[in-house]
Length: 294
Image 1 (tube, rainbow, N blue to C red):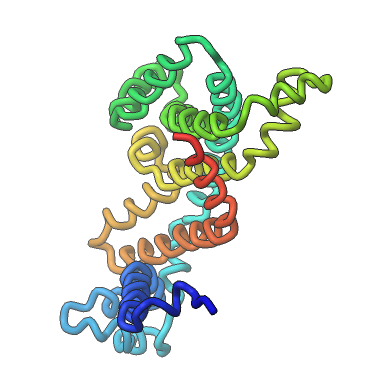
Image 2: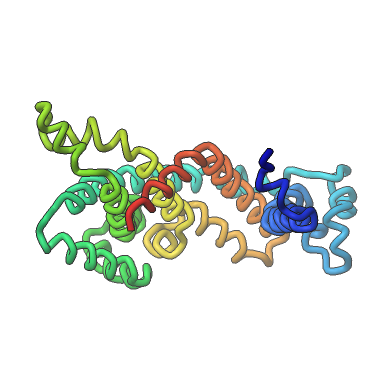
C-alpha cells in the first residue's frame, strides 16, 4: 500500500511549512487589517505618540465621541471632502483604459503572433522600449499639446496617456497568449468557412479568455493605482482616488484630515481584494496559459 507524499514528509517539516505560511499571511495582511481598524478611530488614537495601544483601546475616540469606534473619517472623506467624485473619476478612467487597451491589444497581439514578417519582431521591441521609459517622461511630452488644445485637466487626457503607457504591456502579454494557441485552430475555422476575423472572434478568443481576463486585470491595476499621470494631467476637480488621498496627506496640519486619508485608503483597497478573489481562477488559468510556450 502506497502512502501519499504528504504522509511521507517529516512531521517537523509539515509543521514548519504550516507555521511559515501562517506567519507570511499574518505579515502580509497586517498592514491592511491595522489600517482598517484604525480607520474607525480618531487621529489622537491611531497616531498616538504616547502608546500604540491607544489605537486598540480607543481611549481618545471614546473621549471625543462616546464610543470606541467612529465613522467620522469615512464621513469626512466621502461627504465633507467629496471623495465619491474621485471614485467616479477613477471608475471612468479605469473602464476606458481597460476597454481600449484590450481592444487594440487583442487585435494587435493576434496579428503579430500570426505574422511571418520580420517587422512584427521590431514592433514588439519598440513597444518594449516604450514601456521601459519612465511614466513621467511620457507625461511631459503630452503636456504642451494638451495645453495648446486647451484640454489639460480633463479625464480624456489621462485616459489617452494611460492607454499609451499600457498598450505595449498588453501587446506583449496578449501576444504571448496567442503564441500558445496552435495556428491549426485558425486554419480549421477558415476551412469551415470562417473569415480571419470570425476565426479570431468565435474560435480564438473563447480559448484564450482567461488570458484576456488576466491582462485586463493588470491593465485595471495600472490605471487604478496610477499617481504620476493622473496627478500631473488632471485638475483638482477631476482628481482620481490616489492623488486625492495624497492631497489629504498634504494637509496634515488640519486636525482630522489624516484620518480622511486612512478611510480613503481602506475604501480604495477593499475593491481590489474583491476583484482578485472574484477572478482568481481566471487569473491563475491565464498566467498558466501564457507560460505554455517560452
